[in-house]
Image (tube, rainbow, N blue to C red):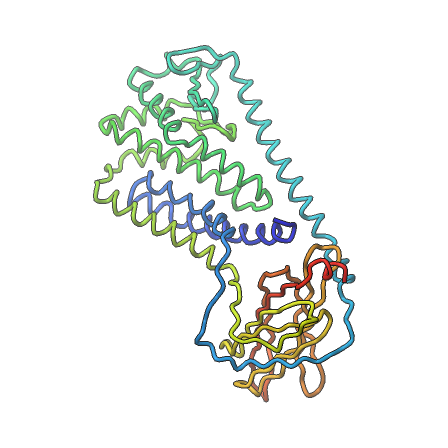
Length: 426
């Protein structure tokens, strides 16, 4: 993945993950009431799935029914050396990528420092059964810590503050975190927050993610001992809430709305039928979210027709032409860099022709500048100026005025150089 592909993926993944987070935040409470905390917690998988979906390329679009009404005229013009000025205007992109890397590294180091500081604050740790006991009654304990060899850490007053039944429930809660791989889920959330440190929505959602994780773990324990709800709630009330917790850990007393957690204890256990229905609903929601993120990407173009072959051409351009929202046709054009070609639509003669000029961009890898123009009777009217990578689809839309009315011309174009080295040297 080169710098342009990385830049495009960051934008696509940020938009996809933000949409997924907003959807999860809108549905989490409703799904929790309908199907229980454990299934509602699984909805958070939509965020990484949406990011991964943006890495899956879409297949070329094949629409054989589209009418090939698109015509291309080649208008030889002087070479347009717009590459260097365009490269100068894009010189900030490498700096932004460097800023992204530096910001992600600093965020990850800060979280690691918090983790190390919290762990050192627990020492010395003394064995106590299948867990470890801290030297002080630290807020938030007991907790499960560690990725490779997770362990349960208890406060120093664990034996005196809680009775035997409460201690058993709290230990079951922390062991459930370990068995459910919640520590690894926290680590994945931290990786995503480090990669997308510039997205405040992910940081804001992280706390809600941990709340849902704790409530799902509560439900997991109570599903085994449903008669212990009152004892479980009493243990919560005896625990000091921790406002500052390490990023890689699951805390019994993590500072989140205790009222919601207590209210959850009063809910009736989910029936098998409701659980199965919830699993289907969550599965469909995850599939739909991943598909939507994938489908939002621009498709590759499949041509319906070809222009006359030009053996000495620099590039092949696959073009899809849209007039007033309707596809007119697709065509492959072989042309030289800096030479203008004109697209006309026989089905919409009232729309002015669209001229397109492609030139390579210097110093930014294999990329091109695409300049569009509307050729009106009164003279050419400049349209959108695009930057695109080799083989990737980019689209431009131009609004047109036609005798008091309005229309639009839209073109999607993918350019592939025949000789990459020659194009880079151009």
